[in-house]
Length: 404
Ligand code: ATP
Ligand code: MG
Image (tube, rainbow, N blue to C red; front, side):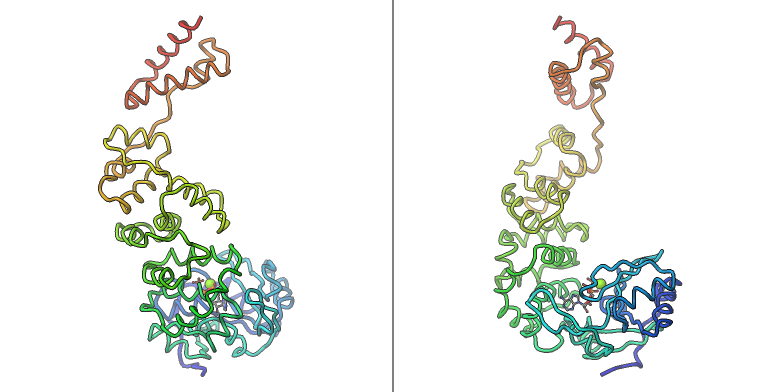
């Protein structure tokens, strides 16, 4: 049922002149655009809106043409599925043509375009994601999404089993939205449908899974969703190493940044560098994320005093040390406090002498020079970084003289 009487509380972004131009561009080409999905849902939930998606009655080629005519840059980011990205000065907006999914293989849909809003709503995953709003914020609600928002209920549009068999990523989205929106406890009917279809999860691509895992872990409280996933056997294919949900709970209680999902992921896994390398490969994580996970899985013991903490910080850098301390505090408690405090309060300085100094003293570059500098660096570290540059130069001189 459509509820044109429901209107979104005005948001700053709804007055963005770029968005107003976008609506006008579609209108001038004879089409209609509406906000859809997360941005409508999140306004109704009183949550911050982080990206804006639109649905549009034009077919993608016509959307692109309409934007070009209006002087708006567009990128055909997902032309096969009807998505054109409008690149505005203030933001990018994904504009997806109204569509019906005519055929699916569980991962990808073959689509047919339509001008029927309700048909478009029918192909969306959850009722709360099938809400639309026009430029003025009038809400169009085809499947009682607003009632579900009020009841904090995550309900599939249509028959859950059919919807999961069309696209099994929706299982992960089911857990993710429960976590992201704090809709707990989990819906029992939806969960039962997910359980019946969980064997299909292995057919997903790593990229799609990683995207959902990231969003799940970034949620304010992913614990009940993750626990249900582990207990229900939803993690055995993609995240079999998930063991320590309690460690993640502690990490969250200690106040880690929710955006820092890699630290959260690390807290779920045993400290095993080989294991996390496999995990990073399985999920096709970026080189940076992989390196962080590996550093976090480094099985070091907690430094016992400030001097050894500083040595550790010097060897791995402040950021990695801070990471390790946060994880350590969550895993084993206060024995990591010394490293944690030092990583916050103490900045490692760089080694005060370099090859340039050695060259100035007449040494030629090569393995000898490298060895000498390493030796002196070890003294400097041993002095708790207190030996002055002058003292280190003297040491270098002595070494050079001793050699000849
Ligand atoms: P957020 O951006 O906060 O993660 P969102 O609801 O906007 O949440 P997106 O992944 O950006 O989620 O997708 C936009 C909309 O597209 C969704 O609200 C939903 O209507 C639809 N959608 C996205 N992925 C699927 C899917 N796998 N199956 C069905 N509908 C989907
Ligand atoms: Mg979105």
